[in-house]
Length: 416
Ligand code: ADP
Image 1 (cartoon, rainbow, N blue to C red):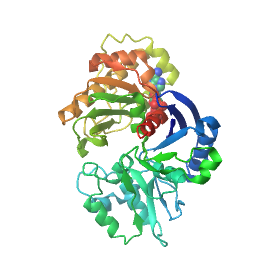
Image 2: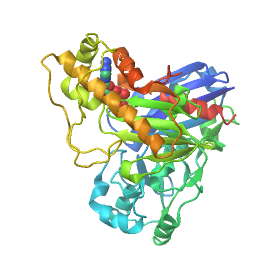
Image 3: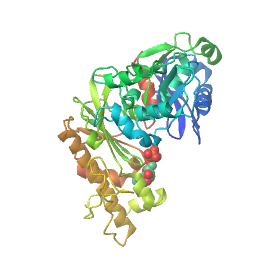
Image 4: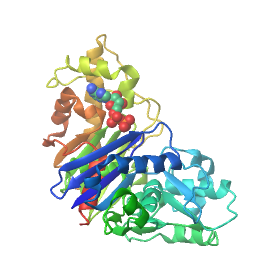
């Protein structure tokens, strides 16, 4: 009995098949430089093809994670009727004042990149002449290709659409808005991530060798799949992602939602996954140093010595978390003569911001941080890890697996 996890990330897709004791049995990957539904479809079937036949024949559950906030609008046959809107597409900013007339004030969907802003944009800019049209997240559409049920989602992907994860329903303002469209737009029905949705289509079972009882489960988002892959599972477990930006996620007994700081909570079983993202992070490091320089210069840093440099490393003005100030200026002065000292100041300062971030989550009502996993490109920097340990004073744990596909496979396993 095996479970298959499939991850559609920002630059490529990956599949990992797991045994019941969470051992990796097989994997596949493919990169894409462009994103269209056709490329997603080809990638999905290429991943399945890459798995050995005897592996496919033992797969009982499949779960897919898509990139959070990547969405598309389809006709009743499941064909995309326009280009998908990617996670970072902010064309919604042109219609934000109109979006705000529909949504409650301070709601997290009041952002140019929210899924609701994208749906609103589709509604304003496309000619919807042959309704109904199905609004789907990337993971929903990929799941549809496997099980054939159109209009099914999960409450992780649906959060940015405005789905109420406290009460497990669409809120009145969103239902009213859709009702006003006179059945032109259909929102997906929302399941719990990992819940079995439907069997794999018979023609795909015949083509790829999946057993007839193989079920496709409701999926999740890329960052939650990465959280699950880390092995974090207890209240107080945090995962810091040191990628282009600094992203904090903390498993908490209580939910925290504070639009001022861009903090929102995903439902995670009977707990909450509280998240906050700062604009500081690896993109600022990359602005000054190549990855090789980061590696080499870091070796000259004594991590036990605190750098006196107090920066707020940003590429442009403004941050929301942990300091909510749209006019916050990048602070990158004074600049020491030696590049290793400059880098030390940057790493030290990002570590301070990370520590303030977890403190902020706690002040706003989340459970306290008890232990930490690290992910992303900066996690491999040992000196930085030691600097961060000085600031955070909690045990650091090694992630179980670095790939989000592993997390999705764990999600699929959980429904066995
Ligand atoms: P993303 O997926 O968000 O683009 P990644 O997880 O791939 O990011 O990480 C890339 C980031 O990691 C880059 O911004 C880079 O500055 C940073 N990075 C790479 N190597 C190091 C290093 N040795 N020390 C610190 N940061 C690093």
